Each structure stands twice: as C-alpha cells, then as structure tokens.
Image (cartoon, rainbow, N blue to C red):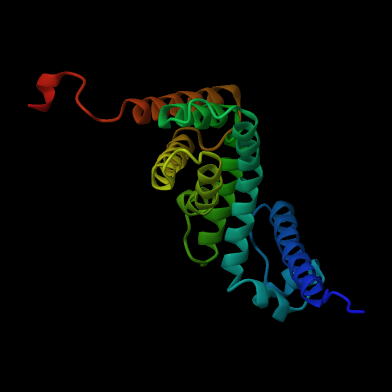
Length: 219
C-alpha cells in the first residue's frame, strides 16, 4: 500500500501561515503606531518568527509595507470582485464590461482605504525607505484583477480586458491623488462628495474617450 506524499502540502501550508503572520503583524504595528515605524526585529517578534524567516518571504521591510498596503486595497477590491461576479455577464461586449466595472467601482467605499494608504506610504517615505505612491499599490492590485476578469469575460480578448481594467484602476489612482490634494484625506460628508464628483469625471472621460464629437474637429 502506498501513501500520498503530504510533505510538500504541509510545507506550503506552513509557508503561507508564516507569510500571513508577518503581514498581520505589520498591519497591527502600523495601526498601533499610526505609521510604519518598526524594525525587522520588532516585526519578527510580533509575528512569532525569526528575522531570517521575514527575509525568506520578503526582500526588505519596504516590501513588507508595500505588500501590507496592497493587501488592504485587495480587501476592498474583493468587494469589486464579488460585485462583478454576481452580475450577469451582459452581452459580452466591452461596453457591457465597462458598465459592470464602473458600477462596482462606484459601490466601493474607497476613501477610507485611500486615506489609510496615503498615511502609510507617506510615512514610509519619511522614514527613508523607498518612496512609493498610490499608483504602485493600485498597479499590484490591477494586475491580479485584470487576469481574473479576463477569465470571466472569455468572449472579450484578454488584451482588451487588460486595457479596460488598467484604464479604470489607474484612473482611480489619479482620482485618489487629486482627492487627497483637495481634501487632505478627511472623511466627512463634503470630502466624500468631492470623491464622487471626481469619480464621475473619470468615468465620463473614459466612457466618451478623446475622439472629436464634432466631425469638423478632427479636420
């Protein structure tokens, strides 16, 4: 009688558990201190792992912080995935896909996430680590999202899906930067209205494109 080799599965499970513990510890320290002010040794102690284990999973402390930020955004993007997956696939056109994506984006409560990320990423730069912006975090999330939507929207070319998703998500990144500049990341009623107005402008711009509306304009 032969028995299945479960050792690789156990190693993978342990590896995933360590990675999760490190990210949970980083998030906990950031929320406790209001910014990413901690050392690798502090992170390892909070996660219950060795310093070496941290570097087995991440290239640097900066990488831990960026991955933590991406995970925070991904938790919100999960709402996006659920919203688009629960909707019918429409007529399998790019127009229908655009409407599904933008409807889901409107339903997401992104201002608190953007405010949190801006605080963390700004603090990371202040601490002398590599300067990152919201665009870096959105890029990481966009790559995963584009692949998932391409699988669901099988009738649409994968390249077209990637362009559409990246246009919307990169646009949301631009909206985030503009919103932070106008509101300082506050979360009152007025600032949320600014967010909605900027989002409307983004969606309108992508929907209409930049082709001339008057045939004479293109002459």
